[in-house]
Image (tube, rainbow, N blue to C red; front, side, top):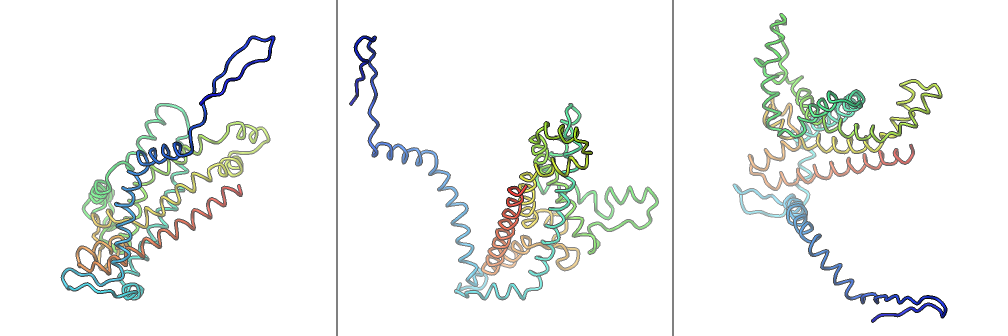
Length: 317
């Protein structure tokens, strides 16, 4: 169906043909076809590999499932009640919180400082950016093996200290008072490059006109950073903080490879490490699933809380 428009008499006529809009049913069919073509595969993958496993884990957490001790029966909140009284779990939760706080604070502070130093033009600074980002793309197992070689009692660091006439160098991984902080340092070192890149992207978005205007008004470097640069970096701070919180809470690879939860009894054990040990080594699948569910709830709650607080800061600034 088409409509014909004709100019008034005395003017050169021109005919414009307009196609009628397709029926609503055709538009809905095309939208459904587009969704099935592009959206449905991703939705199915998310459902199969994320939502269904999470649902199965939550359900298993309410049972006493143990392949070595059948049958499986429903126990309700018994696993969660026992978790709150389990010294191994509470100790792992404490270690996880310490690692998370250290990684979040240290990586943010050092990442911002390094980004400020690298926020310049030139091939040297481009090369240094690549160097700082390299640990991010390395496997956590590879990073753990490298640092285990460096920090072992007879490793490279202690050998160098002995060469400097330090008679009794620290046991970075064997001393219960130092092992947890050594692991936190290694994790911070690996994620530092990510923070640097995010802050560099934020610094690139700071308008040069604002900095020049502040400088003309007599503002020093510290004042310009405090009142111009830092407020503009609020989104970068939000991204880094949330990502670091999640990274700290799910720390596992470094613990498994470097200390295996030691030295001693659970000195460096984290919640993720306890989940794996309980589920796959101890075969207490129901109890391990409850532990994993509680870990998921804690991570989600802290991440949402941090995200809301930091995003409110973005609006305020």
